[in-house]
Length: 203
Image (tube, rainbow, N blue to C red):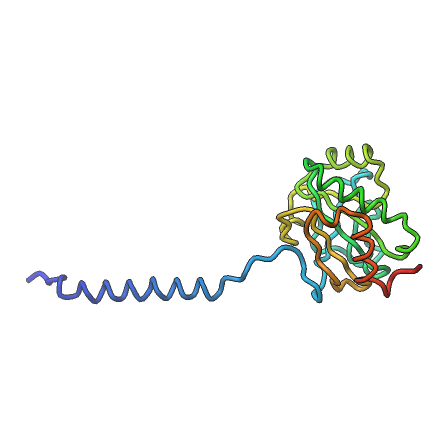
């Protein structure tokens, strides 16, 4: 005698509904709000990326060596930098004039005597060696400018806009996260760097 599955239909439907509700609740409760960059008080994400004005090719290393003995001097190594000095780090893309202007601002501030003791550096996100090196030559940038060929560094920092700037104290603790074109202004950025990293600035 065949079973009358209609008798159990409501049980199956109810069970399916419970599963759907449970999945939705789990998704909502486990979803973290999206944030760009590393906020103040947290540690910078360490990485080493090839410098554009060198012969080093390849993707960034997200687990960089933090000793000089294992360091390739052709790479921007954040771990080694913050061991010695405060770091002001910006991220940019090579097809944006606004982003390029931020690196120009960094270059200008790197020569300001009141900011001696602070390292300025930039990383081109999702950029080729050739394209980044071309910009370095065109603008005459002498600060460290690295390129992030596969976008791994950009993803690590959640870079979705530029200018985006991380202000890090010596040791790697973030003192401030700056986003927006306001920070293209040299005076505004200088004042903010001095306020956030004053302990590491030598006048």
